[in-house]
Image 1 (spheres, rainbow, N blue to C red):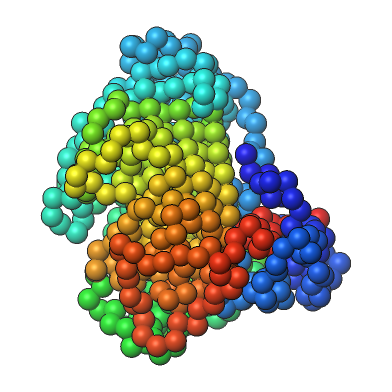
Image 2: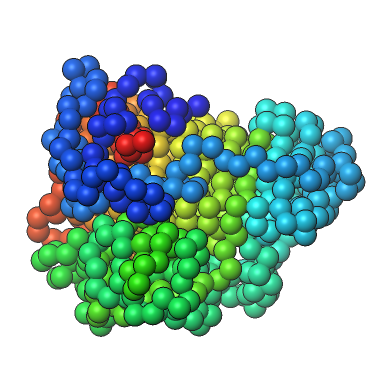
Length: 572
C-alpha cells in the first residue's frame, strides 16, 4: 500500500517542514480556521534526499509559487476531506445476514443488502457489515444515504457475485448525442453511490431514453439558485469577495459556477490562453460546449464580512464576463464509502466498443467527500467511475479479469479526486475483435484530479477529449498499450496544467506519456525514453504550447518521486 506521507519504497523525498514553506501553511490554515506563523512565502530549503536523486528546476519554481505555477497545478488537497490519511470508522449498525443475506453463492442477496443500507441510512448513518463469503446479487447495490459505509471483510474474503448487467436491470438506450452507443459505456455501476434525491430523476430519464447522468445542477441545469455573485479574483486564491453572505456559512457545500461568453474566453482560459486557444475554432465543438457552465463544488471554510475563504484554492480566474456566482446544487452524497470487498461479474466476453451491456463496477455520482478502500472489480465492462463526483478518494482499488473498456473513468465535471495505490491487471483472456481498452480516463472539463502510485499492466493515460485540465499523474508504472478515445465534437485532448511526473513506461511507447508536444502549459518530468508508435496525435492548438519537459530519460532518480505526496507534505 502507498505510504500516505512517504514514498512507496520507504525513501524520504522532501522533509515535511521544508516542503512549500509558509505559502501553503498560511493558506491551509486559513482554509481550516487555524493560524500560521508566517504571512508570506518562505524560502525553499534543499530537499532532503536530493543527493540521492535529481531535483528538477520545475520543482523549485513550483515551491515558490505553488498555487499559481503556470505548468503544475496545486493538487495537495485532492481527495476525501482534503486528502485525509484515514477514513472514518463508523460504528456498525447492520449486518446483511440479519436482513436475509446468505453467503452461499446462490441466494440473491441484493434485496437484503439494500435493506440493510436503507436501515443504516434511516438511522443517520453507520457501517453495514458483509462478513466473509460469496454473496450473489441479481440487482445493483445502491448507496444513497449520507455517512453509510458498506464494509466487507477484505477484498480477498468478501465477494459480491453479480449475475446481471445494467441493461437488463434498468434499460437499453443510447447516448444524448444520438446513435446506437450504450450509455453504460461510460456511466453507472453495479454498486452505485448517488444521492437518493437524484435516483428518481435518473430512472425517469432512462425510461424516457434521455441522458440520465446529469452533473451538479441537473439535466437541464435549471435546478440551481444563486446564493451570491462573486467579484473578480485570480486562480490560486483561497479567498473571494462576494456581494451577499446571508446564505453562506462555514462548512456548507456550494457550487462555483462560471458561464462562457460568446467569444469562448472561458474555454480559452482553461486552455492557458494566448494565440493558440484564441485562434482555435470552438463553435462546432458541441459536446465540449455542453459541459459549460463549469461547475466546481467546494466547502466554505470561513466567512468574514464579505470575504469567503474556501477549503481549496480557486481552480480558475474569476472574471465578470463569465457571470461568476456561488449557487445551490443537486443534493450531494457525502461521507459514504465502500470498503473491503470484491465485486465480480459473471464472466462474459467483452462487448464491442461503445456497446457495453453494463457489467460495471463501482460508480460515484454527485458524490462529495466519499471514498472506496480495498475494493477489487473483476470481469467488468467498466471498472471505477467518477461522474460529476468531487473530492473523493479511491485507495487500494484493483481492476482484474477478462479486460475492461474503461478500467477507470472520470467525467461530467469531476474535480479534486484522488486515485492512489491502484492496479490494472493484465487481462486474463485475449481482447475480442472490435473492443477497445482505454485505461485511466479523464474528460468533460474534469480538473485537479490525481492518479498516484499506480501499476497499469495494460491501458494508457486516456485524456478522452472534452478538454480536461490541471490533472496530475505521478509515480505510475504503465505498459502503454491502450488507446485514447473522444469524439471530435468534444474538442481538445488537453487543457492547461497537465503534469506527468515520474512515469515508468515499460514498453517504451510515447503516446499520452510524454505530453510536451500535445498539452499546452504542461509539465513532463521524469519519463523514461519513449518513441512514437500506434496512435499518434497532433496538438490541438497552434503555436508555442509553453510546455516543459525535464529529466527526460530518467524516472526513479527524480526527486520528489511522487508529486502529489510531496505537495501533501505541508508544514505540520
